[in-house]
Length: 143
Picture 1: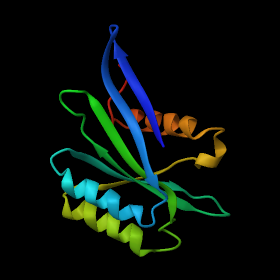
Picture 2 (picture 1 turned 135 degrees about the vertical axis):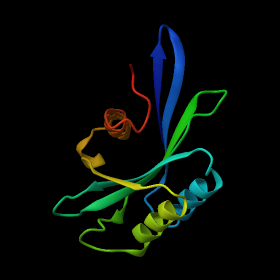
Picture 3 (picture 1 turned 120 degrees about the vertical axis):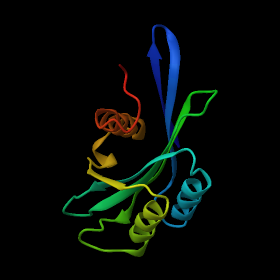
Picture 4 (picture 1 turned 180 degrees about the vertical axis):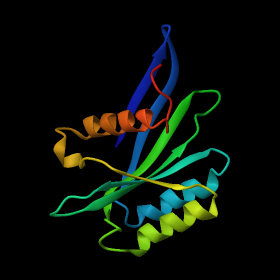
């Protein structure tokens, strides 16, 4: 499942930003780590997006790569809401992601976000996340 956001400037396409969902963070977490390791030169950010709900707090882990050149395509790989919330339930998968960020010289950026279940469609959730990433200058803005 992927969501694509395209930025336009003066009538021309500048950048395509796309979420690429790998899964919920079980065995696919290892693929996310490989993507980070194999794209060290393009690795921009490693994110932990927390949804600290009372009934089931969870975390999404994501890797943002720099845009391709040519092509102006910026992928955001994500394992959505399958990692237990690490601040109440420490776990090996979150620690492995954090250790990978440290090994690659990237700070792990942690944010609290709404759960995807609050949105009628997954694409709306990804649009919401793109907005948060733009506001925090982690991906290119519309301006």
